[in-house]
Length: 179
Image (tube, rainbow, N blue to C red):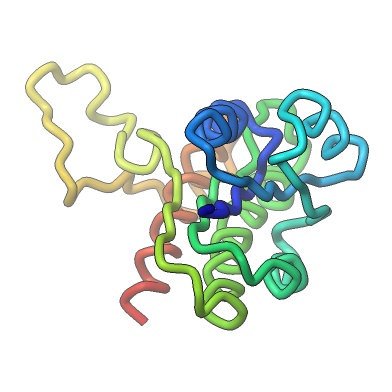
């Protein structure tokens, strides 16, 4: 039986992914920020769902221990990323957790998950959709498209912070793969 690790298992997309995986017979280990959140998911999903507490994905080594504990994991789906519009400090609440969380997940897989054969990093249209093109019906985004937001631009407000968080996290993933 294949075991899938889903980071950020309490998230909107992640819960749908977990539900689909379980319905197809996969075992799922999800990362959650607290025991309470993990227990709530176990109540919803049942015994084929297990969880590991990763209180802060932005802390170096955040995923290391949970991957060491679960050598049965062969697929890792990274969905953990902050998504809220009530951030008080855009850099601390959105940009750093998204970017560092992605790097930490990938480093943990590299260092502690030699058995992991598939990795999926979820992203968003926000990583490619540049606000300057939103009104242009002729603009086409491709796999080469990027949101050109700067770190400073992302600090302007929460909406730009969300866009930046997705852009910088995806860029970090690609940079990690390229070495």
